[in-house]
Length: 381
Image 1 (spheres, helix red, strand yellow):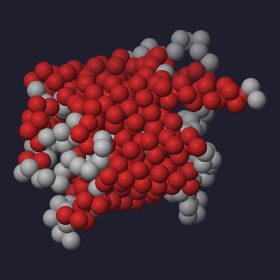
Image 2: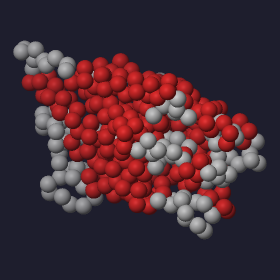
Image 3: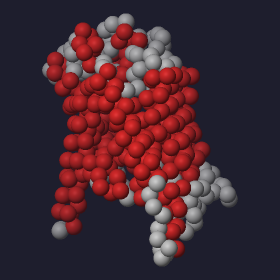
Image 4: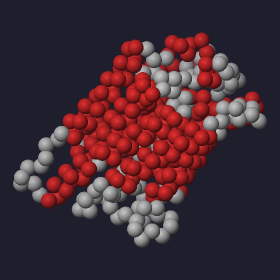
């Protein structure tokens, strides 16, 4: 089997940067890197996300991510998102149809909200802290991702709806209008982050707790900016923003048959996991090895009020398995998970801006409604 498309060095470097992004948020802020959770919060709790000082780090992260993405594809490497395999008309690479992006976005949004995580939250962060719940999640979405990517061939009854011809690719590339929209999104994110940074300090009559909260929230801004930059750089350097890298890995059946399987994604996950795992060795209660200097409070936070927001749920329930399985199906259908979709939206890709993301938000909203309804029904029993 030929490994002509395998790029292990860029995969490891990019993955390590993604791991560094997660490590920065964890060690300095006490927060978890989760692209799906971050983005879905804008529809399930928009007011809180945009106005709560404790959520300000999300806006700073998103602003840094978006601006880094725009600068990279504009000034550093304008061809960074060019898919060479599609450029050469590689028949083994599927071309996702507009409907495929809609279906994929909905399944990813619904599934990640129901299962509380995606490739970053469960994969890079969850596995790094040896969470069995995250292991179950990763096995679920990897299995269905491989199944959906491998099974959606010309013999599949859904193929005519989820796939399209190579000739249609050019119609969905960024245009001057969509690039402007991407730039506006980046600018709005930056404006929101700046407005939060300039938020007035507490009144002279504020309590010590209020002052500590204000200081801790502001102290999260700089680390979240670096984390967003690392995340964007990691995605584009590893080529996780290029669909053939995703399909090249997930379509194991076709890849092995044609001799074009691309295991780069495994290097990305491996690089990210190693760096993220190392960071957890400095967090008390989550270190696998003894470390008498492990942190009880994040570096940027005051001990009064500062804490690590690391999930401790160990329950493997139906919501987790069903949700992550649906996420995997959507991932395999459209070749996108939230992180790369964030990057491509800022870059102005039409199907991502107008089909994948709206569907993702609808899916996230409906999944949250379902979870709340289930919790309410359970509480009545």
